[in-house]
Image (cartoon, rainbow, N blue to C red; front, top):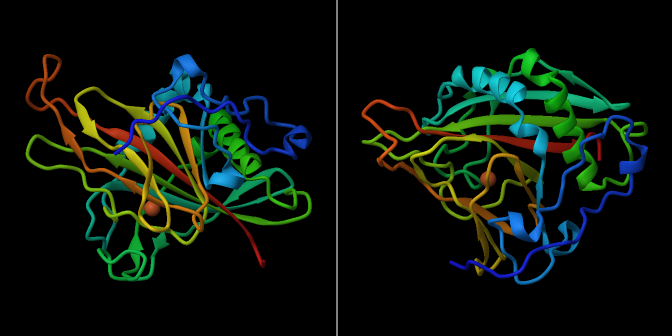
Length: 268
Ligand SMILES: [Fe+2]
């Protein structure tokens, strides 16, 4: 896999950002001196099918304590073969306002996720306190505006789907992403890294062309957001293992917390 050179300076396409009343914290494109993501050329979401941004507010102490409390109660889904601890929530976004629904089921076709074979899985729902936290809402608005949809939320209703995942390997068992092979999700998505501890190896994000040619591998840090245009590229996350080291003792947890964020226009 490649560890590419140079960095991006190309801004996210964001024509409606100026219209967003609440977008005080728009994502910062990674600075050349401050990124593990090294690319051979500038990348643009619209042209290249993926983009990386950084959202500083995720690292703030107050948000980190809310986030840690929320993810501590993630559990494996009912009827799910993959045992990652998760929570989900479905909602609507219109007129710059989020409203959250009671819906705990989720399924993908067997073709898209052979491991789960089209099963209807049931997950705990993300709590309102986390969803309505100002940093969470800013993060969601930031992701929405990065997609540069044709219509603003003043003119169009959008469905929002959130999936919180805690990858927590133990000394005996790796944490397996689902699916583990390069794949598409049938919907554009953004993955934000909300937390990661020491003593983790793996969890690398990889992007491939549709012919499975490798394009880039990145080790996302807390606050990084990877945007993926699903029709343009394949994506993959590598399995995570606990790496015992000087700072690890038996029983000490090690994990990586991510939030998958998806927006789709309703009725298109
Ligand atoms: Fe995926």
